[in-house]
Image (cartoon, rainbow, N blue to C red):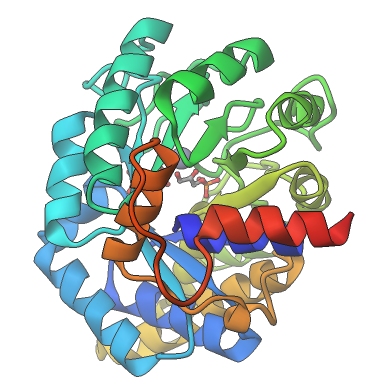
Length: 356
Ligand code: G3H
Ligand code: 13P
Ligand code: ZN
């Protein structure tokens, strides 16, 4: 994932990280990525890993890579609650992990700064040793998804963010700016007092080299909510994160944008419509196919809006071994230079120097 984020920083765009739990979601992401020629991040929560027993997920991802060879894709663990969870994901084949030490291992109780540094650093040391990317989180989001989350917002402190990045060596930093997981984020269109985009700018000013991550970034489009309600659903009036705010974030260092809920809404609306209109239907393909199409439309739209569309050719994915060697150099243990392309951080530095 580090490589995708480095390229995104160089190109000035963001990369959507889409949560998946099943084959139709993976197919929809990959089809959207191929159609828009986008690099993409596919992520699985602990809940998704349990639901798929890991192995179904891994084999579906292998099929995705085989069937879409032109789409650079990273498989990322979303909200790892402990070093053990992160290590088990790496053992299964994830190439990137999030150690969410903003909460204790129960995934609910806000932790303290020293705990967060300790568990995140432990994961960074182990993950980088095998070439795997690490995302950390500072501050807590609102909302509770599948039992994950404290339910209270604790915005990220920009000064603490600098210390956190320096002490842990993470590749990407998830920041808390007032968003929450799920459909119910805001009770009216969000303004600066509930959605603190200014914080992103402050953090980016202090940490211009750090890839920032926005969680809870579904936009909760009214059309998707209306469709569910039109066919018997009862989603209450709600607002998500406007795409223009995400685009503002992308101009200030946001490179990874987490979206789950929008696809869930699209899928649910499409399934409801078929079952409502065709009450004698019982072939799952009759509703899963439109569901897959509806999700694909959401993913493709976000890929265009985040700017990743057209960038599939930016990088030729490097092996974990190459990334491991790059991390060793970053850690100050020199290895002989690798033949071929420059390492991601060198490439970025060179590209920036060329720009100036
Ligand atoms: O982290 C939040 C994502 O929306 C994943 O949700 O834990 O219900 O799979 P989940
Ligand atoms: P949404 O619920 O807004 O889609 O956020 C998903 C997310 O942040 C996963 O980590
Ligand atoms: Zn999240």
